[in-house]
Length: 264
Image (spheres, rainbow, N blue to C red):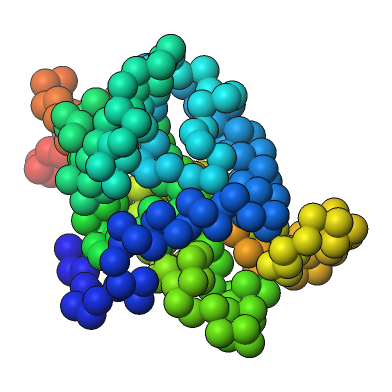
C-alpha cells in the first residue's frame, strides 16, 4: 500500500494546543450550535449498529456519542493525557494516541472519529490503527470538516487560517473514501450537513434554517461537515472441494449409442 505522506509540519503547530483551543471554540455560540447538529447526525447513524465494544477516539464539543447506542461497553481514548481517566457507568476513559491505540487487535465493533484526522500528523496511521482494532464487519464513523464549503470561504476572507477548526488539515470526502477503500473498507453511508455560514450569533443561526433545506436540495456537496460510515470487509479463501463424481456423458439420456462397424 503506497501512502503519499506529508513530511511538513501540521498547519496548527502544536497539536495539543490546537485541540485545547478547539475545545474552547466549541464553547462559543457557533461551536455549541454545530455540536448539537453533529450529535444529532451521529445518533441517527449509531442507533442501527450493534456489538459489544464501541471506541470514540478524541473528545468533541458534544462530549461522547453514547446517548443512542445499544452497545453496552463504550470507551473514550483521550489523546491529550487522559485527564479524566476512569469509568462511569458503561463508559471508560483512558489516555492514548490516535496513531497507537491501546486496544487489542480485532476487538472493537464500532470506532468513532470526531474530527480526529484533521488534527493528527499522520491520518493514514490513524486509519490503519482503526483497521487493526476493528473486528471483521465492524464499522468506523468519521466526522470531518468539508474543505469545499462556506467554511473555506470564511477561512480565506477573514484570515482564520491559524484558528481552530480552520487551521486543521482538511480532507475532502472523496479522499477519505479513497483511503478507506485502500484498507478494504466498504463505504455504507455518507452525508453532508450544516450549510449555514459560520456566524457567532445564535439568533441568526436559528433564522437561517431555510439555508439547511435549500442546501440539501440545491448544493448538497457544500455542507460544512460530512459524515462517513464504512464497514470493514475481510476476504477469506474458500477451499474448492474436488469433484469425485464421474463426468456425465455428452450423449443425451434415452439415446442408444451405436458402434461404427467396418462394411463387409
